[in-house]
Length: 512
Image (cartoon, rainbow, N blue to C red; front, side, top):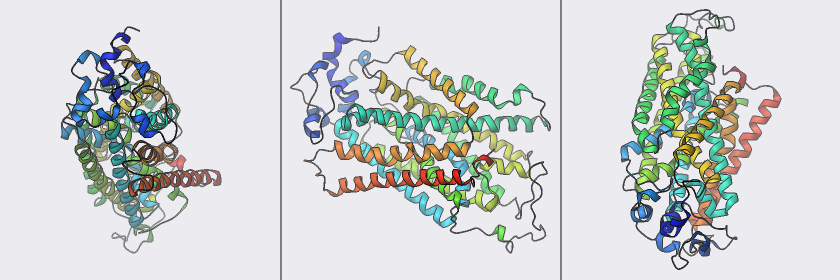
């Protein structure tokens, strides 16, 4: 292909060593030797070791290939994104449709247990980002898939690429799923259409396609992730508006709740005379609660904090990037989202208690479908999740390029084609998807634990040289325990969900 430049391989060896390492995988116990090799078949100088480059200052190590711009690889951009924009991008990658399911999660765990679980997952997410950054700093690589390649060869790269692809396709599907179900309701409410007669503009399938083509595709075609910092900031401001509205509505919806008349739900069988609601058992928040739906809580929480595929691309584009600076970006993003998640879950739960549904906004519409504030919130959430899709699409496209075209330079036709194929596939998936809780449950229970817990830990154990940290050193023992937690979360979550489905008690079909 015209983008291949084999004659320049020898000149670009330093950049390629950092951006896209080539060569064979290594056997267990040969981490150090493998780190010190540059495969001769790629034109690299055998005398030039990767350890030498890995010891360079991070900015020099990473930007070593940027002196000749025409040879810059797609994983080797010059970092130009500011600290604030990086926080916006990573925060936007964390924030998404997961926030709509957290009140439901709190209803099925209780306030205290939910807070404990949320805190644990947030701290563990920050720790796993530390492991990723430490591993990438040692080998001079800032691509999740290539960390897998350096740790376990081709199987490691494929496992990471597949997990990222599944996770982010699940995330994008859930975002567009919200567009599919919320956008028609918003239009219907604004136009005061009580009984839709099949109008095309009230068909969620058409609206998803229109939003994908008109908004998501142009943003997804950006060459670099850093350009989306402004849309990420706007997206986060929409979610702040959502949070403020949830808090406000808590003090305007009295308990017990009287639903808006509709064919499926009538007025609850409770007395409304007790305006305070203190004596009604349905209006007393539970501090701890265990039931069949508790099984969904950990997957939903894990799903809500997954940002790991985006961490290394954002690190790559961070201006004057260092591990410490990127860790600060991650910690600030996680802390802000932690606060927003807890407040949204708490006030959403304290509004509806045990009646809260898997998708919070749908619960408000059962009270009053024409509430102006909730309509505005719906628009804000739709805007936020729509603007998050391009952020989540970038790592998938990178994973596909790493798996299928690892040695190719940036090429616009391929860049555009992958985005088009991904969006087409996701649109088809959304049109036929069963429900939002199923997406949260299955993706959260499989790929999310891999990306948050298992992969960062095992990559760290394999990549950090034994001379620096022996296998029995405290950091590696902690990393091994961390991987064990990931396996435990995955097995428990999948088991609970399968039992829940087979027992016929699942409420997953009630999401919409």
